[in-house]
Image: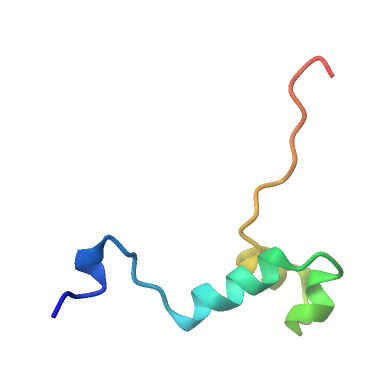
Length: 56
């Protein structure tokens, strides 16, 4: 039997799934996550911010 990690996959936890869901949310991430503060949303939101190149 081939193990999950031996097939090149990375282990993940429930919190990784929660972070993925919050990161992929298009609308209000705070409402979707149920967090009271935006600081907690920032912990779970793992999408990089859009940054424009210098000079634009």
